[in-house]
Image 1 (cartoon, rainbow, N blue to C red):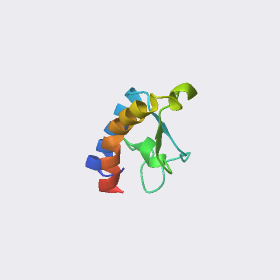
Image 2: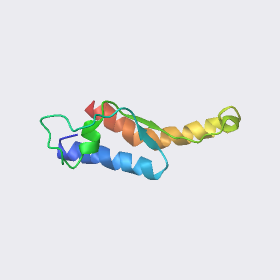
Image 3: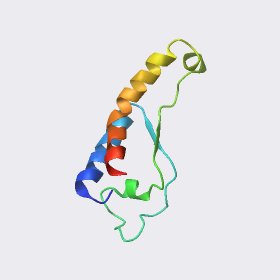
Length: 90
């Protein structure tokens, strides 16, 4: 998160997912950990102890119906940039 190029890339991916109604979830620390400055430009990411993205609001009927395959295909397609970032940097 602290490295400019990779941190900005992850922040951009997560912002794009947020605009597509994905929720960035997971536990966060109350403060930015040392040795990082409290006002670091990616403080929100530095405070995270993990990272999970989820898309709330899928109705049970859709999740158990014939639309499930299309729903999952769309979700996996949208998550490709995050997956590639994680493979390259984690």
